[in-house]
Image 1: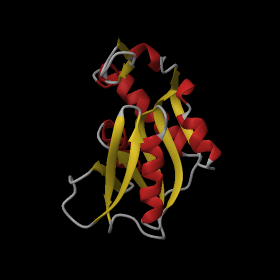
Image 2 (image 1 turned 90 degrees about the vertical axis):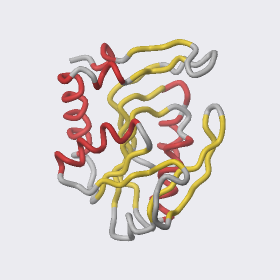
Image 3 (image 1 turned 180 degrees about the vertical axis):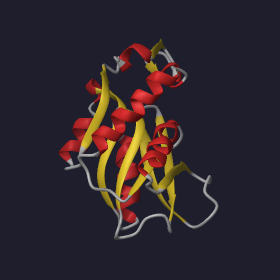
Image 4 (image 1 turned 60 degrees about the vertical axis):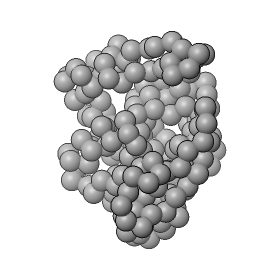
Length: 175
């Protein structure tokens, strides 16, 4: 199954000049969604990890299913002010703005090695912030797995240059 066939491309969304890669067409097809989860699980076998984390919000779709199948704890990396207990926070730049993500302080400790799953990597700002959250929590980043890599925007290369393990299922140009 070619998962690329299940990704819809929407020009000029959310703003002019952006070619948005829409995963809703992938997850609404039960066979394509199952194949995506199976491929993530297969790629995850290369790494040792104790927990799975996902970046809000589309990463939750994939990571929660992987967490269930692998019977690993699932950690939420959320937007600012969405978690009710004490948090670690990291500010970062997006392709079109700035943001903050947070994790509960009691979610990760020095014994944890964390697999981070997200739907897409573009410039890598969000992913790098996610890694910083894991490290601030004294955990180790085992690897990143992305469904889509927008290869010409450099995010994966940036993470690899910082010695992170990076895998993806689909490559698309970002423009």
